Amino acid sequence: MRGNKTEIDAINGAIVEQAKLYGVSVPYNSLIVDLMHAIEGAYIFNQQERT
Image (cartoon, rainbow, N blue to C red):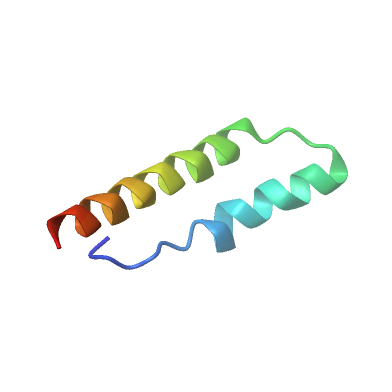
């Protein structure tokens, strides 16, 4: 990650949002989005503690 934001919202996040509009379940895409946001949050938190 090297401190850069991932493209998770642009790719899987868009799929999740469109699925919500059409009432379609996309549990794996939702899981991927949630996991990546957790990883991003943990990375940012760790970087802030080091400074």
